Image (cartoon, rainbow, N blue to C red; front, side):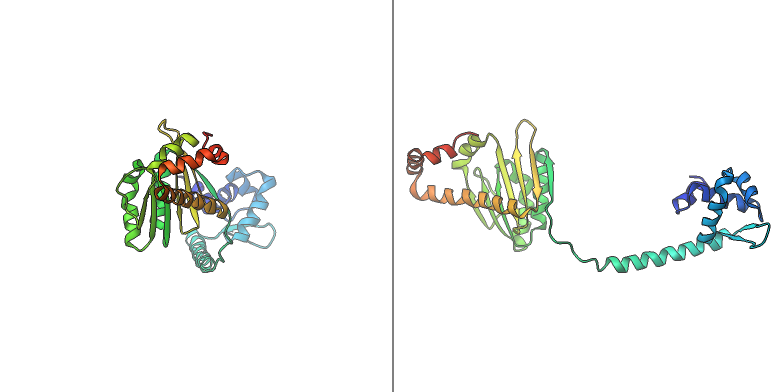
Length: 264
């Protein structure tokens, strides 16, 4: 990077850098002389020199004919450095007291199984109070370490898994009996996690490599997703109490249950 480009990186315009550099090469100088030496159009040179004067980089003779002198680089840039440091310190002080914004809705799209699992792992790592998760066995090897650490630091972890697997959690629920039904109904493997009732990941896992998901802090979606997980757990407990045959019989007798269980 040449001298002129480095000056531009410090806030000088291209014309200002050229005019100051030309004036260092020859001073004192008249405006038209600086214009010729710097190859700045004559119609622009006095505007440029005025800006350099206001910046503290140029002095003029205040008499006719007006002659221009450069402020020497060590003085100019030392002053600029001091001003920059003052501005940075003032800005840091101001930014230290920026008031927090009210909560707002934010949603990110997630792509791929690895992307979904990575975001779930991030939420687990950041959780402070509780985690509700609905996961598939193939996800557990990627998440179990973070789940174990969450439990160790006192986070209450409820893990519902669509299959038998060893998962680190405060409470576990095996949803294997309804996993096939859920997969047939929606045509995909849905996974979810809710942390501290504030944020959620919803994932649609695909064996064909087209897994997609979302991460959001939208309160209504967090609430609905937690209801989804707790609903599955409640149904699982009820089926365990009344037996699968009784549950299936009830579903056959209720038109609404038959409709809800139809494949989408």
